[in-house]
Length: 195
Image 1 (cartoon, rainbow, N blue to C red):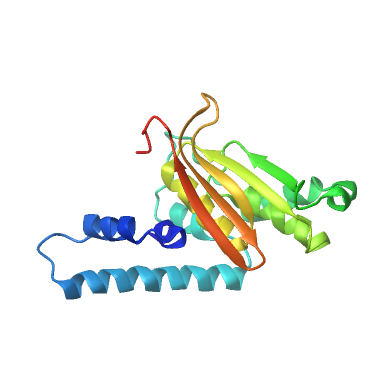
Image 2 (cartoon, one colour; image 1 turned 180 degrees about the vertical axis):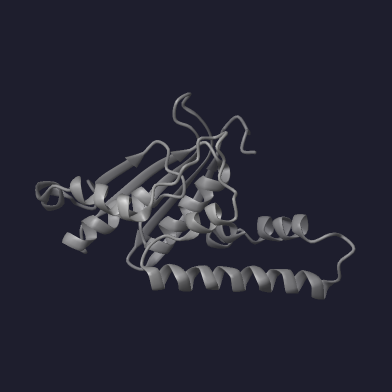
């Protein structure tokens, strides 16, 4: 629902709310559910700002939603920061332009922690350096978390819900920032397999 809000897709947002709220519920109940989602998102924003890092993956793991079957093992934030800091070259930062940004790729991005850490490490050295990150994850929920994390971090990028080994994809989200304004678009698999 958060992504649908960012995409400005009120029709799909209402459909998603309809899927969550049983038919027998009153309009007041529907409004209460929508308000609770808004409060939860507000809390996520607050915690993300306070900690200055993506936290939605932490929540996902804490409720036990990660999956050994899918090989979901999230990299701790401190390790993401350390790894990202080792990979930055001053020459790459100096050569970056809006048409040729510094790129970072993660074929198994999970909630996007490594991508955010890389962008933050670059911006720590040069806050104006253009960055574009790309990630793929086999879990739709993880891909959606990564998109939300990109938006909250103010990072432009592309996240694909798909399989980086078979090169099959279902949905791609593109986040573009121009100043403080973000646009989020979704592209579904042309075969119609967006699940």
